[in-house]
Length: 389
Ligand code: PLP
Image 1 (tube, rainbow, N blue to C red):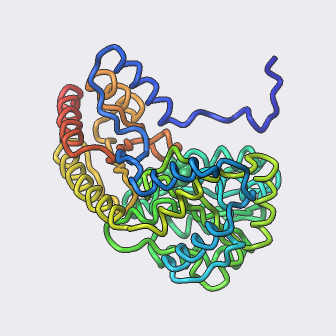
Image 2 (cartoon, rainbow, N blue to C red):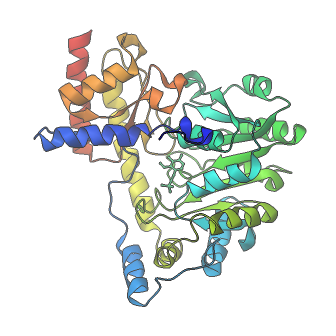
């Protein structure tokens, strides 16, 4: 039987998991593999956070919680997220979920009618296209350009907005490019959203991993708080990918709908995970600062290593933990090159096309790995490039 509903037919695996599986199988044959494919911190969850989670389990916090999360966590998130964005949020605007993904998926289900168009960044996080299609919407890719530091062209965005447009998705700092959207760009997007009565879903999960200056949020522009959903979470900032903890911040009426979607799907987020999340926000933040500094050093090492390889040029990402080098001068497709690198050099990374068609000519490397491994990876890459030019 394969008479499945239309909404699941175009779902495809995330490139990162696919490459990880292939890399693991090579590793099991005894090959040395450097993992730069999956986007997760290589640090363990900070000790104080783990301890808070363990003691929560020991103290019986293993039962259901309200669907939108415990009120004390929602309050703390509202206050912290508001302070970091120079604004104020009400706790009832906050919906806590298992990871940040629910804060992308459920608001999209709540906002997009079948046939509505949704504009999303390409190259971009693969979940965007998937969730738009599951909601019955029409995904409209918005190309990002290297020469614009992986921002988009406002004129082009203006042309893509039409009668059927319902939602614009932004991601800054970006996965996979590390690009950060500037104030002026956001101002234009806000103007377009207000003029055309659109919603904006702003994925800010990398907002604490920044190397230059803070990434501005579109929610700050006049009139935008009523039409913006912020998606954020604990996975990247606090090295908590497996705990599953994230949140959305949105207008209260939408938060109520999203919370009902959660009631009838995931139910709620694990109580002990939420208690660990409280410790993450309220506990010391030095570890986050130290990690950001370490990522910055790794970024510098990797960017300079890649720029030293003939035929490769790499921009300096301003946030997140990815570099997105251009390999188009090598005259080989991204996918082919990524395969060769894995099979011949034992470097696991992703072709830019894992993030959409505008990712052709690029690779994505995650630099949440040791400086030693990053150095070795660039060395192996340089050797392979020599064999193909
Ligand atoms: N948004 C972006 C841009 C991401 O890169 C990721 C994870 O890779 C997520 C959302 C999802 O985060 P989580 O693992 O907390 O669901």
